[in-house]
Amino acid sequence: MLPLVLNAVCYAVNGRAIIERVSVEIGAGPRTIILGPNGAGKSVLMRMCHGLLQPSAGKITWHGGNGNRRGRQSMVFQRPVMLRRSALANVVYGLKLAGFAARECNLRARDVLEAVGLERQADRPARTLSGGEQQRLALARAWALGPEVLFLDEPTANLDPGSTRDVESIIAAIHATGTKIIMSTHNLGQARRLGDEILFLSQGKLVERAPVDAFFKKPATVEAAAFLKEELPWN
Amino acid sequence: MNDLTLAFGEAFALISGLDARLIEIVVLSLQVSVMAVAIAAIVGLPLGALFAVAHFRGRQAVIVLLNALMGLPPVVVGLSVYLLLSRAGPLGPLGILFTPTAMIIAQVILITPIIAALSRQSIEDAWHEYEEQLRSLGANRLRASVTLLWDTRFSLVTILLAGFGRAAAEVGAVMIVGGNIDGVTRVMTTAIALETSKGDLPLALGLGIILVGLVLTLNAAANLIKEAALRRYG
Image 1 (spheres, rainbow over the protein chains, first blue to last red):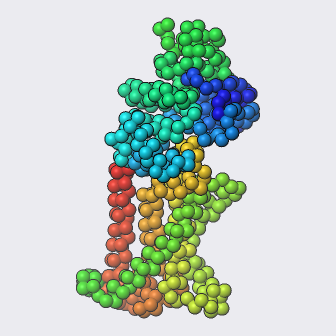
Image 2: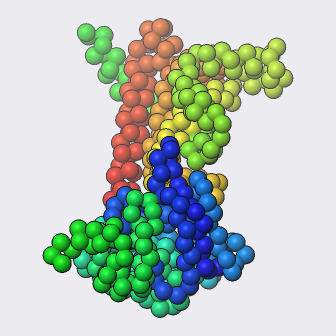
Image 3: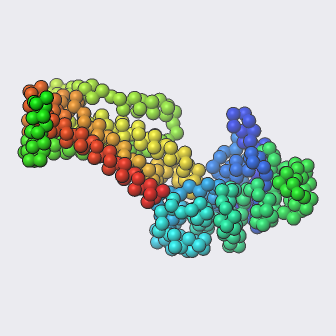
């Protein structure tokens, strides 16, 4: 279904522009990090790509697929929402909606829970898990669907360092199985650890696109340079 | 004062002695109200879920109307059902006026709006929390409303119990459509009204004590269920 092509995409609420004419083509392969300060429009941009929000102008197209938007993509949110049922049942729920057969659901769900290290919590009510465990469960639920593209909206923003490490290594594992990662963050260390390329967003505009090394070594735009300086004042 | 003490004494004697008349009235009350809650739940909960997640023109107006219906005066409901079921009314040929069935119908009309309106509120609150996640997983609105009904099940139990309390404690509507016929349509509230006016205070008091006890027990049960569920499921 990749590449994902955005053509002059805008999003406005009550006449206030959140995203302004973003045009970009995101291809398969490298992990794409959407970087930018709070309020830059990262979440809105990803929600539009995922299909949760409709652009107020412009066009988002998936090429190379039959246009079945949800079929091969899933998303993990900053704050995971767990259903009041067991961890396993939460994963199975997503699989059933995606049309997997009942028997396959259970097998797949068990496998993926093991992959995120939650096999022993499988039968615990999901909402009683810790914040870090819930986010790993959210990753499992998204991963179980075998997505071609996985969107992650600041997945570690609410987590402690230990849980953040767990989540990052799971994201790396998901990428290793061939899933395209598109992740937003305002955490520079994380962008460096997990990213291959940076899309830098500022005040709703796509300001810069560069490979991670080049971006951090020598940002090409004033906005990006200012952001890096702000975030890393000791440089 | 002495009369009152005496009446209380006799009331407790009736309760502890499981007086046959008393038991008959309590059992009929429970049968009517449990049936009414069951039907109102089957209608009201899905309605509440649909109004919670649906998008349609005039949704606000429907919700205002639904909330207003919670305050329907029971005697007016009684009168309307009476007119429908009376011999000259459109449903007269059914011949169910002055039967427990008529009382169930009246109570269903009274409490369905309560169950629908309160569950709409609970489910809509949950929908705000769940919407993005459920849509991301590919749930349409119908599927989402079923998921939300199940996920808010503990709040919904409380709502059903509130509906039951209202049904069991209501007197005007069942008096009109039931007729308070001894052994046929006499329930706790209508019996209390009648026995009080006849001056048979012990039976009236005994029933009153049971009714209040019932309402208290239900509320305590609702509270316990919710607490236990929160601890267990978060």
